[in-house]
Length: 507
Ligand SMILES: *[C@@H]1O[C@H](CO)[C@@H](O)[C@H](O)[C@H]1NC(C)=O
Ligand SMILES: *[C@@H]1O[C@H](CO)[C@@H](O)[C@H](O)[C@H]1NC(C)=O
Image (cartoon, rainbow, N blue to C red; front, side):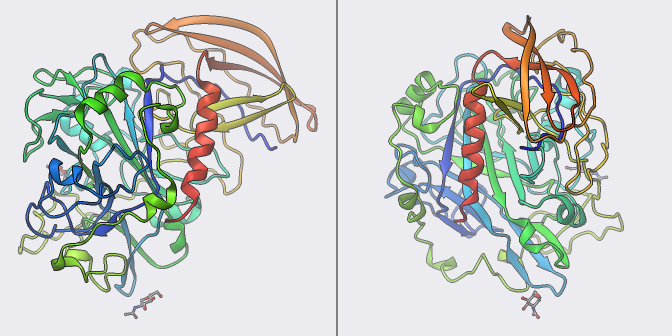
């Protein structure tokens, strides 16, 4: 075991959630009944869920699905988003392989979370957006100003591109709101890019849909925080994740473009139409609160096997049946125009040539930022230290160094100064003493708890264990205060492993 660094971490109190695993993909096609009802959509989507999905599908159609490409048989919802494409320098375009399907998190944030009513649909993100104006990386949620909490700002922060490298510390969920540059991805993202998207979780309580999405709103901290006036009804906080193997194009000249013609990533978006029977979903919200988030921990769900999910496909409408959205040739599916921004993109399908721009594409890249520290004590002898963003933790409750240095390939991470800040807490608990920065490269580590203390933040009690970590090979001793949540930590560590493994099987 190699321990590259140790530091603190503390997550906010974890809300109850379940993680719906969609191992299958029902299709990649130009279908979007919300944005382009009745006709082929302007651009291609990766589509998961109930298979009775077409140009005009609604709740009843989805309920009439023969199958779903997700795991829970009772859920016939449809989930869709534009996939990542690669445009070779000679102009040939192909879709980047999607790895392992997608995950849909159902997180219960706030009191009295209500199930989606019949016919409920929503969209997160704006396909025409082409710039991100917020601080990079995000500020801690505890210091978000009113400007940081406008719906437009929240919408821009609701999407993320996580640079995956399983040999390194995981990035935090939602820490980058634009595609990294190709060079950065070639250098750092050996396991691809994980698309991340959080949906509005506040509802006006009456309209099940609206053309401009005015029936829903983001909560003030995206997750956590408060709902704006008029949107007081809490619905489950939905979060999409899907991995694309961008590393298949490592060293290949060209650029990545989201399926909607967006090379910046700012215009990434996703849609859903609920296909749950509302009473059933309410039952799951009320009863399925296992801290592990495992869908199998919910006694109400009928979980089907992966093969059944993978065999579940949409019967495509004849207009688009012969369209190859995986290898579309020398133009994007739907011939959607690629537009760099930074201005608002012309409406899809508009015949006006895209406004030319001399502004360079967004080239900012985040440093490779460590994620959450998770400690697993395998029987007292060896501790396994892994870092990964926790589910439902999309805003880092941390003080990250802006533009933190990019790690050398295979190198050691620098300890990050993760402050003890609960996303909803005010005031923040006092930070622990600074970690020593000694890097340990030993193959074996023992840990002794030398002190224990507790503090309370936002109503949750945290246990702080001060561990003395012994490293045999280097003979370096490092005293590290390790902050542990009292509950659920091991379960989540196990789930994170499970989650990663689940994503390694290609569709
Ligand atoms: C463009 O390059 C790709 C990758 O080398 C290749 O597969 C494709 O056939 C080329 N397209 C044309 C039109 O030459
Ligand atoms: C950034 O995008 C917004 C729309 O999302 C647009 O109003 C604004 O003009 C853009 N900024 C620049 C510098 O083009």
